[in-house]
Image (cartoon, rainbow, N blue to C red; front, side, top):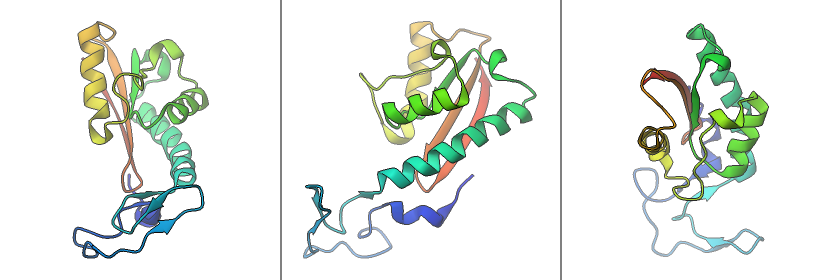
Length: 153
């Protein structure tokens, strides 16, 4: 799914087609020591977190129901590697066993749209995921978007 209502929580206001890049953009001090301009990425972390912890458990349950399965029948779970705090929080909230859950923040981290394909390749190459395994893939992020699917290796 997607919900554009939160666009102001993760945005580069200037550049692209929305507004021209402004070489004279005024610097903004957010009060926490970060200085940026409207040409830079802005992310409202708490709002992104709140969106994610609401949307992801719902899409996981919908995916499991649609596929007439449950977490016990899933061999491994790969989430978008947003940040360690968020994915651990979601893992616990959804009650996914640690041994079935992929985390690679140390070596790879958040590569944006590539986190799930990279993670899946790493899991296959390392032997964590084997032929015949059912893998739950869960993505979320840009544009307040989310999705999940189950693949059989």
